[in-house]
Image (cartoon, helix red, strand yellow):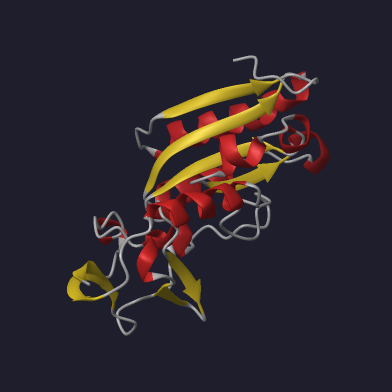
Length: 203
């Protein structure tokens, strides 16, 4: 059938992966450093990926293509939910670069190390759709504020989510994140989640 789907210009693509994150159907993947339309029948033709692309490498075309298969997309989503939602590496605050393509237009998750172990559905409820930074101020014995200030200041961060444990030492990562947002000179939407030692969200 003739229908509207996306076309990716590989010469313009810089491999940032923002289109893949924006595609709710998981029709796009990054292969050999370039975005690819993995399956035509996963592309709904609505183009959520278009505004996410910083290089205008994505456009609409009308062509002979397999029909959009909503049932297959839903089944694929179920499979993906059982897998890691991590979108970048490294994740440790002290190791992550200050500038990276994945920070552009990113929702940032700043989490204490222990939270992913305490909260069972951490990937789906917190990591999914976000760029993840983790650390433990007690073990690292550092103030992450300076590094976080530069990440927020030098990149187009959309929002910040902070996840910490209820234990007092986790206050360090919350304070570092909040201080960094204030010192960056940017106004960002942000929220804090506190996880109990038995794996519940307290606030």
